[in-house]
Each structure stands twice: as C-alpha cells, then as structure tokens.
Amino acid sequence: MKLTTNLNEINLLRKSFNINFKKENPVIALAGNPNTGKSTVFNGLTGLKQDTGNWPGKTVTQAQGYYTYQNKEYTLVDLPGTYSLLANSTDEQVARDFICFAKPDTTIVVVDATKLERNLNLVLQIMELTDNVVVCLNLMDEAKRKNIEINVENLSKELQIPIIPTVAPKKIGLEKLKDRIADIVTGKIKVTPKQIKYSPQVEKAIEKILPDLESILPDYINSRWVALQLIEGDDSILESMQTYYPDQIVKEITINLKSEVNTSEAF
Image (cartoon, rainbow, N blue to C red):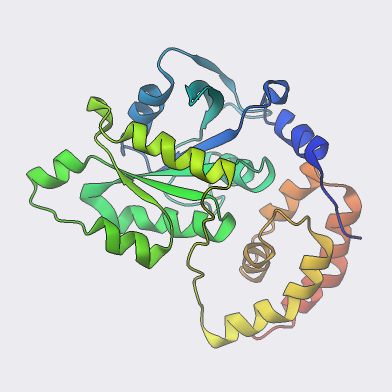
C-alpha cells in the first residue's frame, strides 16, 4: 500500500501540529541546539507577531510566529532546542516528528559558530531527514572575538546546503536568511544535501529494505532515513507513524520489513 499525499493531506497533517493551514503560508521550522541564540533568531524574524501554546498531547511549549518577506507571509515554528533527533526525550521527538510529518517547506538549523563541531551533529541528522535545509550560522561576532575562523563558503560546499552567517541580536544576516528561505520555498534554488555514507554492512542493510519502504511511504519522507531508524531499532518512529498515518502503513512495515531488518547483518 503506497500512501499518496496531496496538499489537502499535508494540510491535515500540519493541522494536527496546530498549524493554521488556512493562511496558506509557507511553513518554516526553526531547529537548533539549546543556547545557540535560536530564540533571538525567532524574535528577530517575527517581532511581536507570535502565538504560544503547547504541542498537541505534550506539555512542551510551542511558539509560532509570522513574518512577511516580499509581500508574502511565512509561518515560523520554533521547535524545542535539541542536540539530536534520536527521540530520546519528548523535546527530541517533537522536533523530529514535526520535520518528518508536517513537511515544513524549509527547516532552518541555528548553529553556534563558536561550537561548530558539536552543533553539526544535529545539522547532519536533519540533512538526512529533509532536503530543504538552511543553516543559520549564528553568534559570528562571538566567534570573531574568540579568533575562530570559519570558511563559510567551503563548509557550504562540503555540506551542499546554504549557510547564512548571522548576529541575531543585531539582526545582521536575517534579511539574507529570509531571502535564502524564499529561494528554497519558491524553487529558485534546489537544495540537495550531501548524503552520509555508513559502513558497508549498514549500507547493505539499507539497500535491502529501501525498495519496499519506498513503495509504502509517501514521497516526501526520506525512506533512507526511516530505514536507518529501523536498522537502529528505533521503534518510536513506528509509534509516531501510528499517530499520523493509516494503520495499514505501520502494519506493512511491522510485519514485512522489520523481519528483514532483524535478519540483516548490519550490526
């Protein structure tokens, strides 16, 4: 059973995350590690046009804001600050599920320029989940003060995603960030993040189950990423699918594919 999706189905999925799809705004997710200045970026982009509540079924605060760029309004959704998308905590699961199931038109990952190596872990995980990624390389003034030099152009080429240096408290770089988001949303630029290669055993296990997953899952979900979660034994992704997809999808994966994963030699 292949789950086909259209705009109405995407809107219903977004509605389940409290997104007002009737506005017909492009939906932008704002992700990042804690203490990267993510909230400052959120406030800098949206000003006072913000709504707060809780994520559906969770006690985690959800903040949404709005900004207008080139006469078009955008909805910005502030995800909980997380170090990964491994769903080891409620915050991580909320962030992962929104990117996975609400299909944001673009995901911004706010990165602390003074702690680049640690922050890139989340960037790489999001690159595996969605193509439409842009990095907001924040706190560039702090990096300069600490004599940290970052070759932004080379890093962007290496990761194959746009990277915008910013100093959010001074709103430096935020207009360029809006511009790059608009480019992605309108299709002016197409982002194709670098695909991470794993050990031959893991790649073989992915290759084994990927065709079946691609025949079952909707086109907008990265089937390779789902395959990795199954190989790692992360059943929480199946639990989330039960919330957002028809029962038959999860049954097919559980009955047919998990047995293949269990017999694989990935680990």
